[in-house]
Each structure stands twice: as C-alpha cells, then as structure tokens.
Image 1: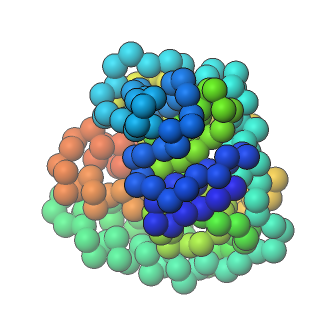
Image 2: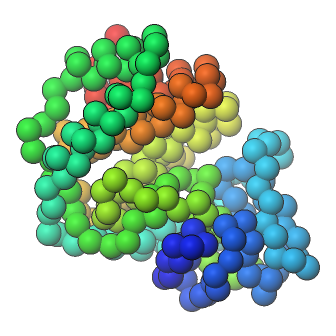
Length: 248
C-alpha cells in the first residue's frame, strides 16, 4: 500500500502509483475500471479517469466488488488496526463543537435537538494504528478489473488519525445508505452483507460505534447546509437519528 499525500491517492495491492493529480491514474492500466457508485469513463491513451456525478447506467456495485476480489483488499486495509485502544473523547467533543459552530437556521437547530436527546458516553476509545484515508466511501473507491487493484481518490485529513476511522466512514454507506441519497436503490441486504465481510476484527462497543457514526454524519452537515440540498439534509437528519438510536 502507498499513500501519497500530494496526489491524494491511496493504493491497495502490488501497484505503486507515482505522484500525480487526484484524477490522473497510471497509463499502464488498460480496460475499464469498475466504480462502486458512479460510472467511470477511462481514456486509455492519457490514463484519465473521469467520474461524472451522473447516476446513469451502472453495474451492481456490490456484485462487481465481490466478483472482482475487491472485497478482500478492502477488508485487508480495514483490518490494519491493532488491539491497543486510544482515547479519543476530547477529539470527538472538540469536533462536535466545531461542527455546531458552523450550523445555523432551522437545519442547525434540528440537528442540535437530535444530539441533545442522546446520551453521549463519558469515555470514547477506539483501536489505534494504521494510516487513515479520511473519506473512505464507496464513491471514492475504484476497482480496476484488468489489474485487480483497488485504489481510491480524494483522501482528506481526519480529525482522528487511525485506520479504524476508515471503517467508520464506509459504514456511512453500508449501514446508513449515503450511497442511496440520490435514489440509487442499492439493496439494504447487499450493503449490510458487505459490512459483515469488511468489518475489522477489533471493534469497540456498540455505543461507541454509534457515537462515531453520529459524528461522521455531523461532519457532512455544514456542507448539506451550505448547498441547501433537501435530499442531503434529509439524509443527514435521518441518519443522525438512526446513529443515536432515537425514536421520532
């Protein structure tokens, strides 16, 4: 695996990617990549992968990942944590307050109300170790059929630097349906099955997992507020309720 911070590319498997912009990939790759969520148009001559935000003709992403062997590579990445636990209570509290400071209006008030109705644990500890991609969603993972390599795009800094946070991030898709926010209709069963297959061997208790899920949702809230997209705002509100296990 190689992480190149300048190019924001994380690579799994035997291929080493040289420094390049986030949307340019090795010209040695041939054939068409499989993208879990949106279609990829691959220019063989330049090695340019263009991923338009158009959810048109697409393959069944879960079947494509299983058939191509991508599942095992993703599982191997997420398993790169150790049993030593790190206390992230303060980091979570600071991040939550920073998010709340960026929220305003009815949307912000609604999310604050959801969080006030939840019981936040006094101590939050998670598995340590491993590099963190920071935005480990299905949209940012590409499986290249010809080479059998999974690689990702758009790595960002994480407020907690441990690879376990990559698992928390992909749960955003697998358990809360972020990849279905535009009506893609991936079956809940296929997403949950994928979660069972890639879940790290070391996980904290359910209460801690739900709090981290909630923080993951809250990180999206300022962008949803800025873009004023009703579909995304509704997803944020519903996912926050689900993560904190509240009844409306």
